[in-house]
Length: 195
Image (cartoon, rainbow, N blue to C red):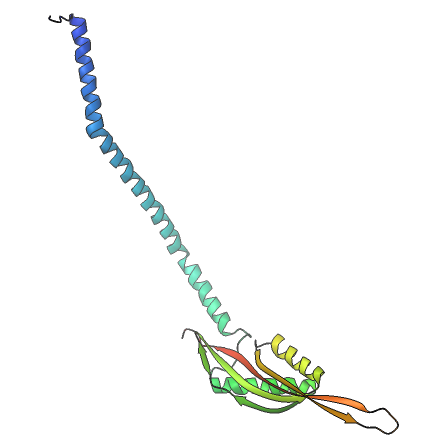
């Protein structure tokens, strides 16, 4: 049995086959090409975004360098660090500072001794061992003055021992005078700049 198509039907079948071939050709060639085009376009858009970001960073560089220079200058001049540039002078400054604080509080400085310098990154730690005497009120004033003032100083290795004395005055009750032997390590820092 032979299938005979009318001219209108054969044109419709030919047109259908042509559309199927065009669809298969699109799926085989066109769609992968369009997908690759989209992928490349997204990569280009991402690269343009990065480029705009980097251009913004380059434009901001002079302002950031100026700010960094200001911060470095301020950091070198900050009152938080010991002022002298050499460790020996800084240790002497620290000893003089603690002596002044003890005397202002009404205590007595017995001795000070410089301890070895310690490197801590961009800083040098300057430490002195201090021995003083005075009552509890003197110790409180000294500790508060050292830790709350400038330059920033830190107390460690605190040792306190009491020595009780009784003072007798005629016609009055005996008065207990408590004197403390106080020992501690006191340290501060020198900023070494760009070392």
